[in-house]
Length: 173
Image 1 (cartoon, rainbow, N blue to C red):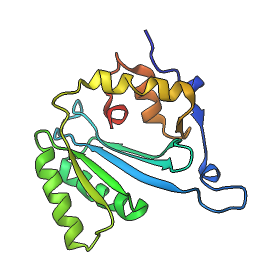
Image 2: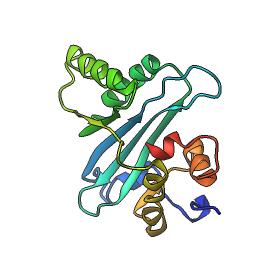
Image 3: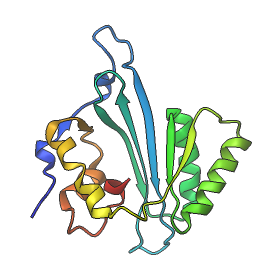
């Protein structure tokens, strides 16, 4: 049975990130990189999801949903690019398997490029079950606290097909 129904999601556009006077909302930018090592067409996606959390209301806006079936070193370049673009408060990296090395390489790369404003955080999900993590998003979606952009089609598709879809990397991120 379907858990997520995108027709019931609350959507936003860029203008919703500003107040009535055109000032930016007080937002904290956070991201997670779900690292994938595979190189075949059946491999998982490398997925980097960026959210902006309103410090006043707690509303979470999914502002960027990047995913690509590519080698992890290619995704590393995108991670650096995303950090430069958003200036994340925290950028978390899955540190299971190849993720340990990607976390280390990202840390070194940010230091080399003198990017110091983003806290890198290693995340290992050994205790939590992926399906439970994704299912835990449902109440946030239902209440409208988690808001989506209509053009994030791969994320919306993965949520709609969860738990029976082939991929859930963006949903997990």
